[in-house]
Length: 326
Image (tube, rainbow, N blue to C red; front, top):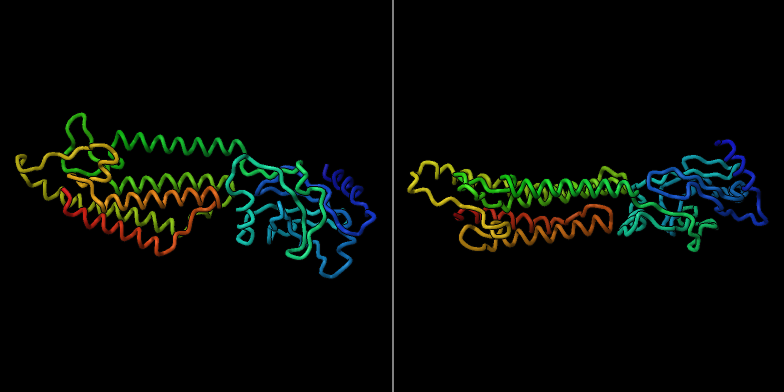
């Protein structure tokens, strides 16, 4: 089958009246990140002999005018005028792939295609902007269903466990009365929030880009701040509970119970607190930035040190001002 294809390609690649090379065929016609594609270029041999700089092994693909730097042919057949490329995501072409795949609104779309020497020359092509037979696949329908199902399962499980168990609730000294539950913990809720965003985004980005290295150092820092906030709050609660364990039943304060998700997160027991409101709002703002970056640029954001410091100060204020809370 391969030999027949090459023979047909060789016949089609007969020199034209012009010595200028031209891309006349690409297969498969559905381009996707990670796939290997074959490109038929007329007059490739004649072009390679025109100048020592005309090196077919240095040609790179251009999709919708975006040059995929560093993607040199994996195989080069000069006599048959065939080039084979593996469409891969690298550090050199990350921005180009971001423009091509970012802000997805469908599974894929028609694209133009050619090859050329990096920054010097682009070959003529039949696959121009008016050509609609060549498509770039962003994500396959089955991968969309898988990612949505995965996010839904994790989200539903997290919500149900949070509502019915003590998964993200405070550790109070005594169990609540029958029919009541412990109050929600701001620190644990923040940890659950980042866990869900990072996990589902990681899976989605992996399905689109094939990259397993999408978690940035600043995301690790955010998760570390969140874990430290929860740990600090838990230590304060544990110390407070140990002190209360020696009191008689008459001296023990009335058991604190949940009064609703938002009330529990923003209240210190008596009234709403600004230090709680501050960390709650900053978490939402960074979460929105995170989602926007993952959708538009297909990567998790890299928060600067100033923003991380501000988040750390908010977390420190929350832990410090939790000491006098009831």
